[in-house]
Image (cartoon, rainbow, N blue to C red; front, side):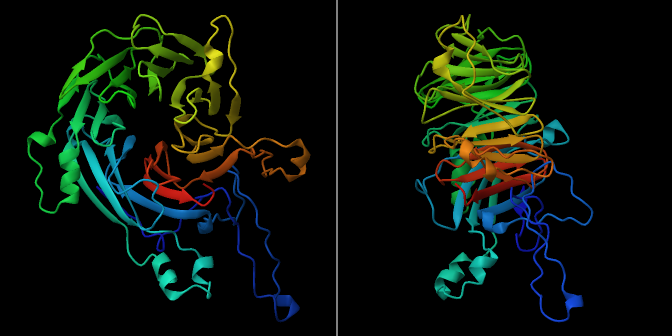
Length: 452
């Protein structure tokens, strides 16, 4: 499947928001003719053009953990598997399980890949290694003297995988894949995970195939979400505006043949309400965000024109159930208070708007435990992390950060992660606070910043 890169052998370029152009020349003694001018440390803003001889260097001290992984085929989508290693894990080395789907050269070469990433060590930076006051035992525990370990099991998947989603219930361990063939496959991952954790365990031929295939759609799609309140309930949306509900009764799945009708263009994303079992939201290329009740398929309950271009992604806040965030094709991020959607005669306005990304928003997700923190990825090869609880203080205008191009850094912007090409999707790890995983055409990153 892939392999981890050694962070001490490879150079990372443009990995964080704060970058340095050159290190200060520390050799300031001797003849005056040998004294070189000290370079000023500058903040690099994404999109700025580098001048001649300017080089970006990643600030490793900005990361608590940072690992990258190459893959055989790009993965447009992945999801994080809940495990039994404990909640709120902060110790290192860390372990994470994910499931991803490939975009191979031929339909028959695609795979659904279940990966176990272990021995994920804390990042060692120069400040740690030069601290002579540390005990040797503590220092040894921080060093990257062991390479990360990647174990994987793959299942054949005919057709490219547009999106992968895993049930949020830990005991189910069921995944759904949106194939570019127009079908949605449902997989039981329990035997696969057992094979990763148990030496010598053999996956049966039956376990290598989907346990159910949804054939309600007549064309491919990307939108899909499992319910967090009703186990086994799945909604899927396609490029022909149709949204279908699939339900699970005991061990059997049943797919509806009657779609939810309302959108006038492709359904791009779907999100279940975190509290209401019959309510979900949809985002579409028709520039709207709609709220639905599963008991009425003929008409949405609420609708708002959310953006001036396609609405690519949405995320429903798990801690504040009236907050929804959306990202559009023009790079705009909007935060919505769903309580303002009530009156159909009025057009609600977002409670916050941000235009930082210079290309379409490709993924967006609220932090699972910090209600004001949001992760966003864009086609401009950036991942931005926001804290919406930070407010602008007019009295501190003198402290504003302005880049060379005149772009002001919003006070809510905590961090910018770079180094991947063509970023497609990101997720916060629900059991490792502050840990984020992202997939791109260039592979996977798993990292944790010191700012979260």
